[in-house]
Length: 367
Image: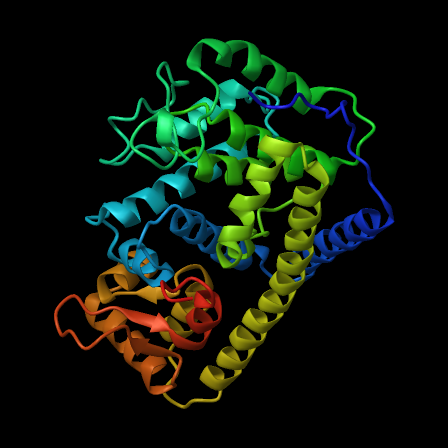
């Protein structure tokens, strides 16, 4: 059974070191939001960073899909044949829907009803269909082991969930003296402890962080890929969650969480800067070439939101003939902007090499 929110016995103590971490994390989030506002097309970064977060969040749960796997599936234009990529696509659909729902006057507020709908979208693939997508669990689940008796963690029994989830929902909207970013961290732990669904709790709990940041005005765009920090420090992540559940060590978790927010937000600002530099340099190099065509230039401007393409995809994007699309791809390949993803001849895909290399950092399975 979880400790109640807000923590009262004992209460959370924001000592000077924790306050310093909080200020650092808040400033880093502000810099990231400003970085998004100052670039010519923030949609580049939203596209890129949301996909990076989706892949990393799934990898924490053991999914083997990489960012390049996802980009290739999107370039092909059809449904994913790989179950791991399908899970990542479910995350993208859940986030896209929930993010658009929050600011709508007639949209769902941040609530268990919203989270259940996001959960339904999250588990839309073949693996999730048998896991009661969109429904709070009606049976006991556990993590590790073969049964609750030898499990590493056993969440509350289902008969207690209505009461506990009601408390959780009230905690999201209650007047609370704690700083909003601290509340985001506390609510994430509480959701993971409640584990209210049969599957997908980890991914939905990390998606909840993104939604809470918007709910409290800490982020106007989903640019924080916090799962990179959680993946890189996975053992510590789970240890900190357990310490809250077993000892009420909210402060230890908050120090870890706030450090992660600060580190990743600052890194994302640097990543955004490097991506912008790559686009600017590529555009200048292409404009300087005598073989640059109007269609090649139009294709280049689409690459940040379509960093992996096929000839068929270019035809659809530019509404041009197949020979014209092939010529545009060739011009960009000759300019060193595009390169084949692999050596296959049929259904060949090309990637915006330098752009994708920056994005892929931390998302490969060996990272």
